[in-house]
Image 1 (cartoon, protein in one colour):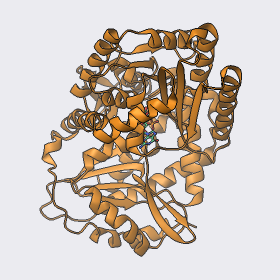
Image 2: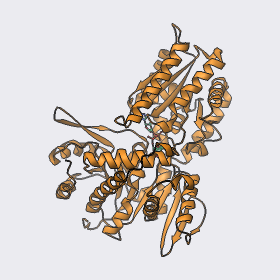
Image 3: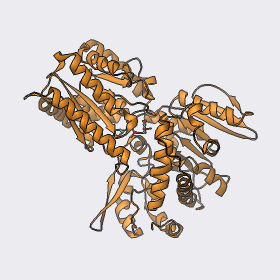
Image 4: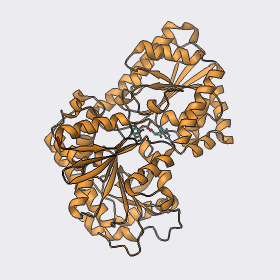
Length: 509
Ligand code: GDG
């Protein structure tokens, strides 16, 4: 552990991935920013506060420290916080990331038990990789720092840090849902995972429902556990240990996104998109390529809607953005094929010389282009089969300014609880419900649209990402974001070389 003189405490965020991905082309390295809910939520929080972000830089190839410094240094400086890479081997990524994280915890926690692959070597890889994260964090953190561990890939980290130094307390936020007891019971390492969660000072969930599920599991595995309090944060005692359990919905930087949505270039581009789309109305879908996002269910619902309501043909176009994700995994490639097939079936059935019902793109858009597309869209549709929160729906509402627009939102997203008054809620498993919700959204008058949008915008504005982080910090450490002021950063890289030797053990093979 690095002793820190006069250290009043810094922000130390840990997540599986750094907010950038290192890629090499002909031995030339570059870093691309990664998009995704977690990065988009945490980046504005950390920005310019001089803390650390610890994570995997997205490559298993050997990268020289001098190259890392050269590439990550200027980005760290621009972002106002340091990037601390954790180097992982191919075997680590195979077993820890593709294996335990994405073939065990991700499907199980999203209620897709039949997609789980409970291989013992995945568990071993998960523990091994978490130890590597623990080494890096331990090498940099001081007892005054606020260590914030994020998501299902890193559940064991808190207990590992405590083993290294009992004063190194950390807090944890789970971005994905926590399953009900009967689903959780299927996990062969259920005791270990539950124990590891109870080692954090604060373990926090997106919704009260997730926390309820967690508490139910705690009561079964620790029959003597006592739970005190109500509201966002409650206290749990197990024998002589106590910890907090919270439920706080993550959100977006509302002000930034609403002013971006109303900015000149975005408004101008939104008009162009509307002209290009040509139809009276445009409906947008933005999802990572993942079976939990319910993209086939959305397409089937749209197909049914065009079949049942032919008057919508040539009047409504679906613009579906699919962000590539985990594309080395077979299942994800199959999903992409299924989506392509469904889209070509719809387009084959209904296209005319003037109209293509579904326009889709497999790739990411620059931020202004994404917001222009949100702004241009009369309807946004989210049909996740299960989703921790879903930030896309919040971004859509923020981008619309005072304009109308209709949000069709799956009941099974965390966001549905906050946005239930304004959104058209839908059961994505019910193709008729999806179809009728699209029709209803298309027909909704301007006045109703504006009233619904207003209530959703208000809810998002009141509980934006800074509310989320303030509440998290208050619960975990009795602090607020203002206690970590924005600052001028001197040199962002002196610490990196100190960890060079520590990395040797975890050098990629
Ligand atoms: C996980 C949980 C939870 C998408 N396409 C582009 C782009 N994006 C950005 C969106 C949004 C993010 O990606 C997606 O966030 P979601 O929340 O919808 O989903 P996950 O990535 O699955 O996130 C989720 C979240 O963590 C946070 O806790 O809400 O439930 O699954 O921010 O804007 N950004 C850009 N171009 C794109 O093409 N620039």
